[in-house]
Image (cartoon, rainbow, N blue to C red):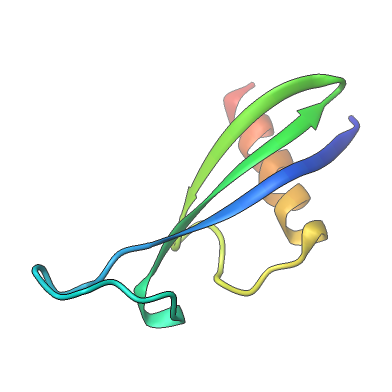
Length: 72
């Protein structure tokens, strides 16, 4: 299986309702990833429990492979 990461966007959300959101690890909510999987564009969303704040491309590919294997 060939997986190439096109984009990765971090989502933030303040844990305290009504307070401003900041781009810090404590406010990390999840990540949206666009990837080419076997030359087909696919979109993935991972919550903070599924994918840590500090990850590299290899970690993202592993998470996508795991998600795809769970779907099949």
